[in-house]
Image (cartoon, rainbow, N blue to C red; front, side, top):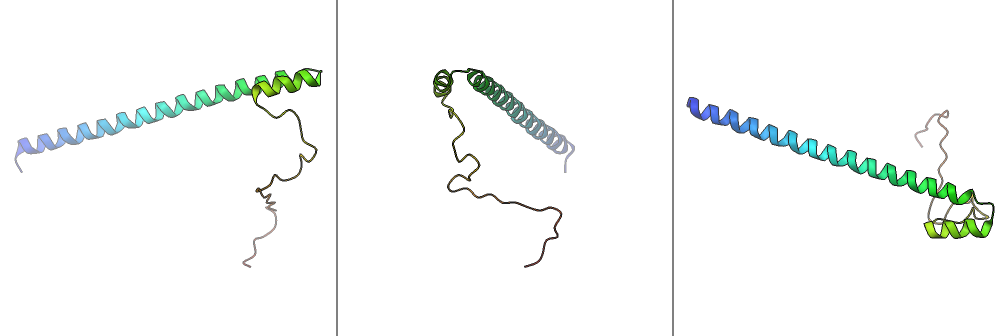
Length: 99
């Protein structure tokens, strides 16, 4: 292999590695930005939720929650499992049998 061909191969490899590193940096930057946006939205939603719940008047509280499109209160069967969902309890202290 000629020396000039080897130099071009090294340059091509370096450019390829640089492009891959740049792409990885962009993906990570977008992931961090999305995480920050999600955290801010969750914090704003939580603050609004607790602000609504601080009202002592039930009608005002329910109206505030309706504007936020959140549930107004805890339903009577709040501890019941919603339809289509299953609760699985795992005892970590018990050994797992092969049956």
